[in-house]
View 1: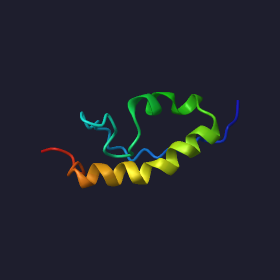
View 2 (view 1 turned 90 degrees about the horizontal axis):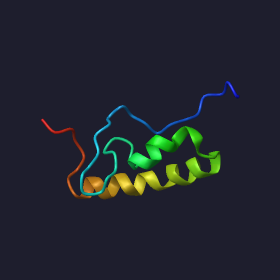
View 3 (view 1 turned 60 degrees about the horizontal axis):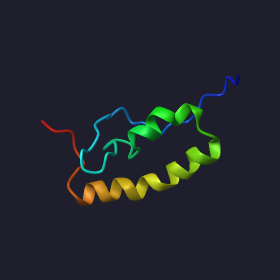
Length: 68
């Protein structure tokens, strides 16, 4: 097992948007979050490259802040 930490896009805002099923903090799905450590580096990179568009879509719908 490697001692090199696995990079994560997590920003510690773990709230899932019920409409898209994406975390409003990082843009990943629950399945992606749960499987992150077991994914290949290539799969993680594919997901990371999709996150800006996902977060932009969430924000376009007004899902960009933690509810009061």
